[in-house]
Image (cartoon, rainbow, N blue to C red; front, side, top):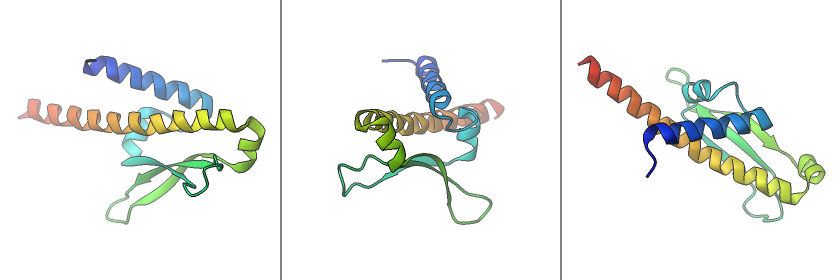
Length: 119
């Protein structure tokens, strides 16, 4: 089993590679700070539709949860790059959602450990 530092390093490297390739967000640190979660929206009723959007959720003060689009693969882009490439990009972003979730948990663990040291 991988240890925390190795997983963290792999996650950071994965995010940076994807961020350089697709210009998702300024940095993983800012993304973890700004968003409570990320998810993919897609048309699950049409299996031949490879378009999707990567969305981030956030709250400001006591307001309702808001959403922000971080990346979009539209119909024109899918036609330009082809379905195989679109499927590959979608899989990369599905993995990014998992990486982000894991990084959020690690951030929460880090915060708890820091609070324990302060006591």
